[in-house]
Image (tube, rainbow over all chains, first blue to last red; front, side, top):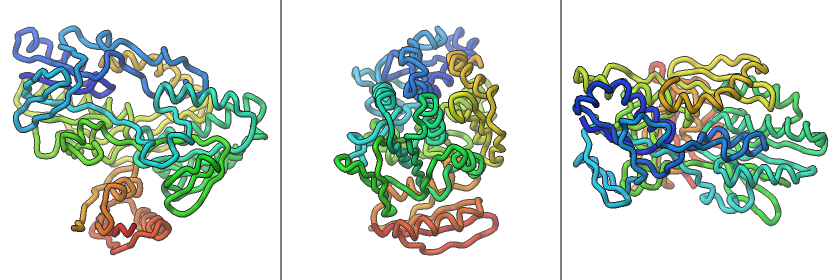
Length: 377
Length: 76
């Protein structure tokens, strides 16, 4: 069984490592092989970017060498795929090499699309890249007062990020002693302040207590950079001194170019995690079109199901598990307390009051991630 | 040529039915009709509020069994 994993982010790396352990006897007996193709020789812990944006982590803390995270039996190449020839069970890479497979796992991830909104790239700060997070921190450090507005694109990676960055802004300016000189305005696309109803119910009184203003049904249409005004599709305008954007995301360009899914999202069976119409092609993490959070957590739980099923197909000829929609997200409620949302397709999250212990658990997880992505945790 | 696309947002809490509708509405062409399926009762009120504010057209909204079927036409 030739297993090919395309993409070396959280989902692809966990699938490969988990499979390497489950199939160790078959790999030793040359009855199975695992190849991982990635666009980079480095692996980034993306949730750490929020801390970089507030000067709490340095960018170099977010990276490890990808090869150092992989089981040694995994055949790893930095050679991104250019062509998916799904009907022929093979891919062609940037270097021109052809990889044939029996089972394919697509884990190519997502990208920001700020350029879709006129003025957003020039007018807004964002922390979804290393460069952006560092630039945002410098802007925050130089900010002495005025109005900070937050806008949120649809769809976006990490649905918890909008409330986390807003709580962090409050604590950051409070710590600098200028919170009374800063107005924080939160703009959100739907008609409550978070997509998860219980998160919205929890966050609203927190926003009120912190003096954070908010507007709902605000989908960004354009940014007038010169006059510092952000306009919504719904017809309202918001003046700002500093604009922070959670940008719209798409799947990767290679997915669109190969006609695997509109906007780069691959149509995926929500339980089997297979590409629609292709039982030997699995899709993990941000790359799916599933109506679940695009987070490392979702990718992690999906990856475990995919690895379990591919391994069972090798061993007994059939998949044994289904993805139940599980997601577990930490929610930083500022710089010294946090809570969490744990849910699946059928059970909504039941939020607890934020506390210091959960914050320190999250800070610990920021280090434990490297164990998690190795498939050990 | 316009088409009707079905968006299955049943049994999902995040990003949720209205966020799913907004995502697919951005992909749609003017004149397309989207049919949102949702098991969340709040969707029946949330969608018309957004549709009316942004200026699309509510085509229909009905509950069949436990599932809301809400059709919206993209106008602009």
